[in-house]
Length: 326
Ligand SMILES: Cc1cc2nc3c(=O)[nH]c(=O)nc-3n(C[C@H](O)[C@H](O)[C@H](O)COP(=O)(O)O)c2cc1C
Ligand SMILES: Nc1ncnc2c1ncn2[C@@H]1O[C@H](COP(=O)(O)OP(=O)(O)O)[C@@H](O)[C@H]1O
Image (cartoon, rainbow, N blue to C red; front, side):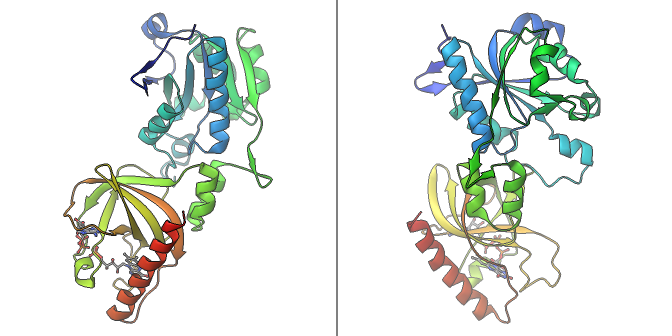
């Protein structure tokens, strides 16, 4: 039978950091028959969820633990050497979501230049076989090993026929394949509603409140300036209707993302600043999570403070209306 891993309704999930080659002691002490979903899974969008949910379901049927293997840093971050636009779900966010999905173990494999050169054969015989993977669950287009030369159809044979492979078909919305790259593009074009539809939840940024230019209060709209906790994909500049959670309470609000062109000609610093409704506390250095719900308009340069203030007032009304309906 599957080992019960729930205490008082909370699933216990263990995160295990691995690097190649696997440590002998780790192999002796920790490997076990399991159903393993493998993938980069940045975003944990609806397509990823269908792979992981298949693994969790299959694990339940087989009475085995369900695990997920992912890689960090993102291969594109390592290969592009610094020219990477960030994570949809940085590691902590990923762990939080996987825990809610009922996963028992998460393996985070260190991705570096040396790992990128591991052959498909060595990936399977050096990692999957010693982990005692019973069934590998992968998306239809999963690739692995040097230059992505390995595919799903080769997994079983490369394992010496010791593991089963379950391949999950593409997840489509309106005939389009849900993908991390599609979500990145949507975010960078301000299409937050599409990004959220494909994610199956709202895109969320976490960080702490830092000091800004002390102008917000004078304008009548104090704004909490967000210092991102991790290297997130930053959404397109513009104004958004948001929900902001501070110490367990969620407030509606409106957020500006951009350089504040009214005050900074050719501004280089990119700000993410949220005005929370029905809120008046001092929260510098405290943690916030910001859910982006709707895109309202582009950021603009205003001719006067009065025009900017009037527009922010209208944005706040628009945000309240949009958030009431969603
Ligand atoms: C809803 C909202 C919309 C905004 N839109 C713009 C804009 O279009 N152009 C602009 O230059 N600044 C815009 N701002 C930014 C304000 O200029 C900014 O909040 C103000 O400068 C206060 O900055 P501070 O928090 O650093 O003091 C907007 C702010 C909010 C809250
Ligand atoms: N309704 C609110 N929304 C956002 N921040 C608020 C609100 N009420 C009070 N604050 C506090 O005021 C600060 C923002 O004031 P502001 O004048 O814009 O200063 P700064 O330029 O340092 O952001 C926030 O960081 C927060 O501590």
